Amino acid sequence: MHGKNERGKRGKGDYAQVSGYIPKNLAIAFKTTCTARELTQSETLENLISEWLEGEGIDVAAFTSKPSDKEV
Image (tube, rainbow, N blue to C red; front, side, top):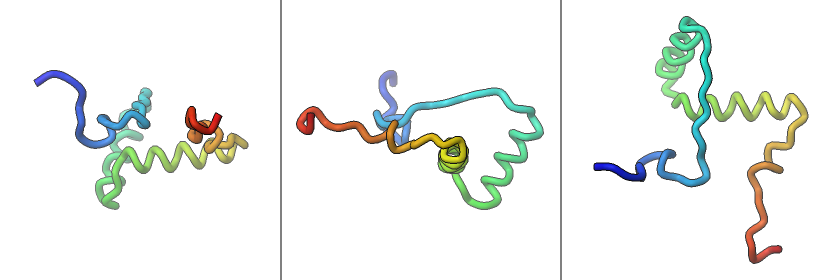
């Protein structure tokens, strides 16, 4: 079957995939630790990126909250 994946976050329009290359040993440690702690990689990355942006003085909410057409 082809088409849009409606399962999980992939089917939600308010989520986007990010990717990058990191050393293999770091990737293995990350995946293993997430699994051992019963955490999803997506949620862990979301939390880490949010914390990093906030540490950089970036207001994450400014990027996520958009007024609807009715509010304008």
